[in-house]
Image 1 (spheres, helix red, strand yellow):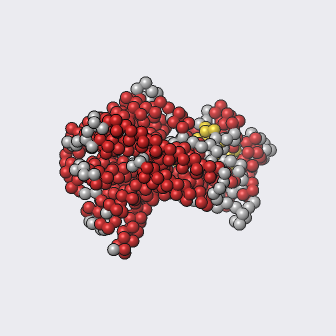
Image 2 (image 1 turned 90 degrees about the vertical axis):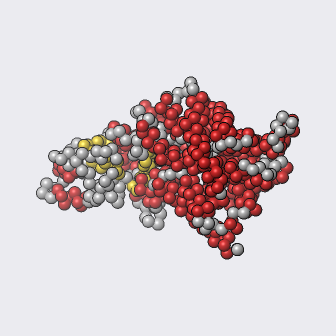
Image 3 (image 1 turned 135 degrees about the vertical axis):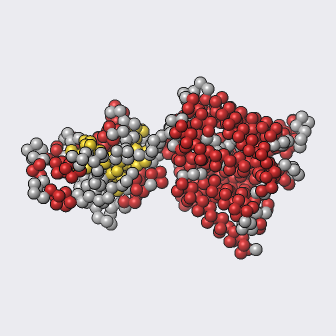
Length: 632
């Protein structure tokens, strides 16, 4: 038995990793592959042994995992962000959530024949969407910035709100026992106790942890462990004092810590994100493996009707009621109505409540899990496969991510960004210097005032349409750090930086690795200081379109010594970057962006005199050996 348990846990973790990796590769929500894996391991093949699926094992796992997941979500919920996201998101998480809850509850009652208690609880469970499924879908669909921001913030905010709603509905069911009129007063007292105990315990644990972090009573090595211990303590203590108040306690604790301005929770949040990823992977597989196919099959065709109602009636009604009078046009509102996949919180809490209701003798408890998982699988599969097509049909999809996130808005960065903009390549310049940002805005460039590594940038920096990082700062450390930060966003092959003077003279022992800051822009010898000096003297970044009569070889014969090639843009609008280790060979039809070095050479030197007339090919090969050129 022990060997089977060890093998089962190892297999679940390994398969969870493979599902997460596959989701990353194909840019689909990992929940889809996790649920399918759980179904195959459990009901289909029975490979996941029943010793891992018994209530005594699953129930504590689900309870603690949901507590950690809700704490991690609420740790990102800052009050000023709620004000910043605008009226649309505030309406969606309040009016929209209420409309969704009521409509789904009524449809569940009439279509599935559920009693009122189960209908109201199911409606509350499937109100939440969640960032764990929204964010991967947005990366695949790439809707415009307004749609992305609304969906992303709705997913973050609705998780704790929906969980609290489900807890309150469940508590009402437990205390009413089918007689709400007779138990109304008693129910109100229990609700008040639940909210009071959860809020007080969560606030107390949050204040204790905040005090310890602010006074530096904990070494950085133990901050994450102490946080996890206090989260579990808050959940357990609150649940002992008032049943089911633990979820509210961890949510309040997370919100309190997120809004403390005198402590830094970045390290804690990173640890919790990694832990949540592990728990999510395990939880989905185990919950799906535990699901009984009979519960889903018993729902029959009415469940498909309920799925259609949720997608085509409940969600559009909530969105259109919440966005009336806002700045969104009808295409954007329709796209918001199309995307609302359900995620981990709905699955975990449904399993949690189903286990409790089974023990309480509710006959329809099995239907709760079956219906919830049907909604999760149905919304994820349908919306993952159709949302990209819908975004293109409505013309609200961003173009391919071919643009550049440029670190720095200094004159060097602005000159490159202007050339890219002239060739219709989107750019976003990031700089904490207001003077640089002001000059960039006056030049008509898209900017972000702030530090690219700040928490504010993590939440508000719009990366839509951007697929490359170009670090143009004079600080080699900042260039390397931004490369590390945005490596997961753009991929290692799309990280580039300008070399600094200190890096040009550094040895392999002291230089920063390419894998951190990306490859160096341009030919060897091009540094930020040199480029800044040339631009200050009047050098320009120029664009040249190559033709069959004036190809790259001809361009190099005429301009190779007086111009530094920086980028090349294909006829399809795909940019490629000249780097120290790769000299491209652009073809006719491409646009070549280069730095004019005339300011350095002076007017007395003839451009043609810099190349030997008899051996131009030898000079070209010696100075800049052409290599392969990508096909995109």
